[in-house]
Length: 249
Image (tube, rainbow, N blue to C red; front, side, top):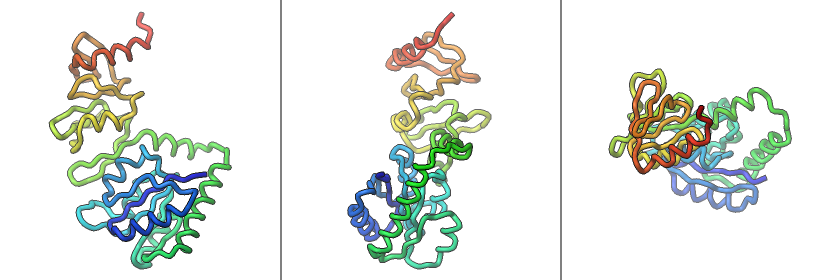
């Protein structure tokens, strides 16, 4: 069993040390190294990270610390915290951390920590029982996205997103039953790549819509519940292909 792991730390020396140790473990695959919690969250679901090595304190412009970051992860992802003292150990274990390592990390302590992770995931894999809680956690992993807005990281539920509108270097994310959109600094292309293609479709250079929100389709307009969305020439064929999969009486 190979575990996808990632590093979130602002200390370059700590990152290099962890990379060296991870490279010696055949059951660990490093899929990301980050100094920014925002960038780490962007890739979190795409890389399917199972084990995170997280620094407690973040320096520079990072807006959340290691413990706050760990609270944003889905329950199946396990965390090994990295700190420069034992000051936060009790708090971290209350967050159900797998282990707590202190810089400078020696290989023996690292080896024991990652073996603990391997045993934990092996037990989960061997337990074939699908409990309601496990089903709920799996659904949660698939139905949320994190975005940065106004110096905050916001968790958005995908089923609540109605449509996304491009606005230069920003996008406005409109949610059902929310009067104001969430303004996020990213491109439409980035949003299109991150949103699940079976739930969302781009119909215009400035609009991505939720498929199950479509009420009517005209030659140049798609109507959602409370909004008319223009259909661009470049995207009309894709929309027609999607519609052709459904019986029309």
